[in-house]
Length: 299
Length: 212
Image 1 (tube, one colour):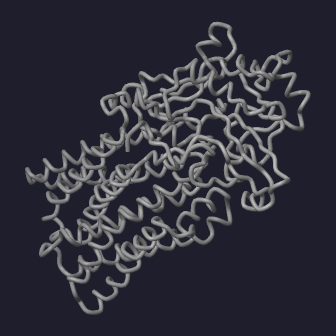
Image 2: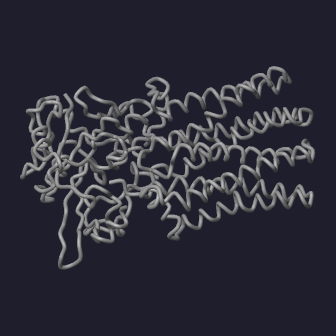
Image 3: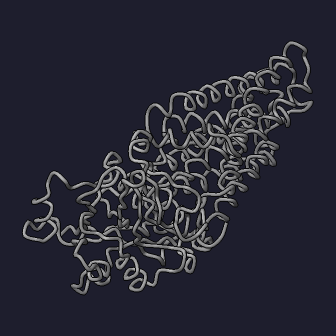
């Protein structure tokens, strides 16, 4: 491992170009965060319509609008992050099918088209058609959620981003943010049972995501020197260490505790607090995980 | 034909002639490099030595940048060079993130990705890359890897046990080789990088594409 070589050689870079700064900035964090909400609320609507059809029926139009807005935010920030945004159309004309970006662009565009149709159907109150299209929209929401994990996995040598864990994290983030948003949006529309179900989804996705983060934090450095060097940006203190732990507490630990508390005390306010914390914290967690592999010197 | 590059680090003396020749030939803007020579000091005074490592695009046979580019702006030429079409590039920086060698940058003038192309324009005119011509000690050896009579093939045959590539575990199959390299020269994590990374300035990080 590199640290042993370092100890033996005391090697120091004395003349080199400075390390490149952050390549994918906070715009990409917002991109991922908004996409999680956009697909997550669709997952939750699909589930609620099967479990609580009468109450969830009233959420068809609001959910379609929320998903439409957040997927547009996701696309807008994707566009804003390009250095040549006016060439965006090249993706659709000169598509490279080995690229997660190209495949994701087509899927996200189709997803947005389906959301627009869903919104129109909900507005027209054609619920039979809405429910048929919702099935396909939900199925498409899975790869739309996952493709960013594929993109991160294609970043060779940024070893913190592994496909199995990142894909799990992306789906869990969508379930977490989708359930949190539905808890807030449900208001008086959903009864306590439905809200409890959303709370369970929120709590379990928080628990599973937290387990994965802690597993990577503890065991990741034992597997690859790049992971060890990357995790060290969190372990050695500094801004990313603070952000990492604030994110873990806000997104996972506190919401889990508050959900248990809300169930025992039957308090909707505590459930809503858990939802707000999870939504805000998710952006912080995603930001840290996006930034730290970019700090690693590649050359 | 599969073009490749070999640097004999035993010969390199860190004069940066290749770096300057590359800058001039390819009009590489300030604060960006297609090729640079990294100095790493090894040991503890008075038992110290300085190593020099020219770093450029590795023109991988299995290039992550080519794979991730959504518009095929990064593409293979028939001679194995990984070339870039700056008119097609959308500046997503996926290639910058995917390259395990940190060899790609966003050109602050064109706001598109750019990197070493083995001077593809010169090669097309049967000329050697600018860095090869500029090297005063012939540490840079360039040629056809498929031709057993080429200089590079002969060099690899002679130095078989000592030929290395950077990060072989990444499975990229680089067409860029080193003789006389070691962990300190080829592994970026095997040396300390204090703030500034340089004897002569205090810049810690470079802006990407001139913004953010």
